[in-house]
Amino acid sequence: MRPMNRLPRWLPRLVRELAKFGTVGGVAYVVQLAATNVLWLVLDAPPLVGQALGVLIATVVAFLGNRFWTFSHRARTGLAREYALFFVLNAVGLGIQLATLGTSVYILGLDGPLAQNIAGNVIGVGLGTLFRFWSYKRWVFPAPSEPAQDVEGGVAASARQPEPS
Image (cartoon, rainbow, N blue to C red; front, side, top):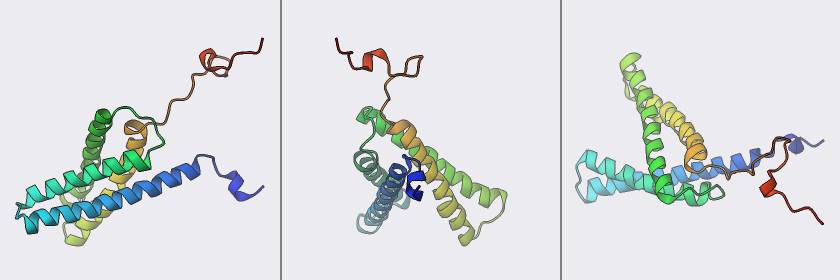
């Protein structure tokens, strides 16, 4: 038996989704940096306003990329529902990032620039990203529903092909 035949059938799809998810995240990050800096340097926006608007623009880009590319093969549950859940789960991911940074700074006392970057921008972003990927697949862009199973393990009667007469 060849080694590739031993891989679970779902693994190639997961790898593709992860690659697309990472690409969309990278594009959204570049958009966030560009938008924030344009707002700060060109439009003279206050620091927090520029940051917040840059993140908001990047979140819209990430939603569109994930909905129409990363998870395009998944069930559609309505644009408004998906968009609202996406923003809520993004906020949870941000909370994970902030909790990681807060733990490092305020509990462990690691408050230097290197420690803050490792805690917030490496560990926090990593954990938040894992949460986002899992939660988007689970709740925002769920897998298409499978036909119901009857008690004998077969396909439900309504999904069966009619028997020949």
